[in-house]
Image (tube, rainbow, N blue to C red; front, side, top):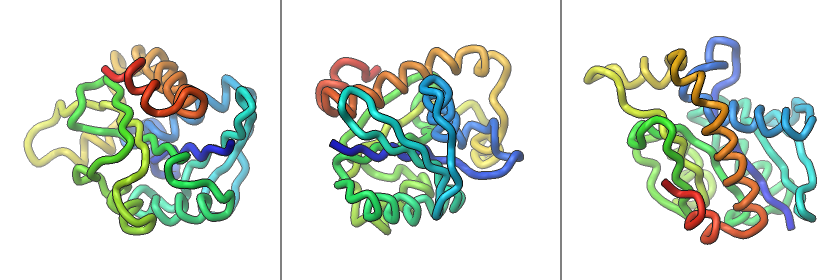
Length: 186
């Protein structure tokens, strides 16, 4: 069985530790835990490993957030991985900081990366792991918040939350989305 894990984010040092890059940060942590290195490939940084007999391919699109679908679509086709075996890791302001929600499908909820994925892969029927970043920003300042850096207290909590997200990724690839949702969703 093959799986594609897509961490959403923006490339470049100015975005590296921002809330919007939680998909990249989570996959970087997983890669570190598995002693993997990233390669620069077409439309994405890529790496892969085997886990419990599954081939897990991970990508961090280099297309910038708003064109994430371009990279995801390319790698799904390149690796011949069906959409139900793809998991997108994305930040979500509608979920409190630290909460994680795995879903088999759903709307973009205004997230430009997810909108692009919907446009280029044909709809909302793809699994996503929504990483709550909270909505602690004044009206009209959502972009500043999402592209802003984590607070120190958030940084202190992130490793534990990312480790739970990694457990959810591994569950998705082994026990399936339904069992993983019932076991982990907050």
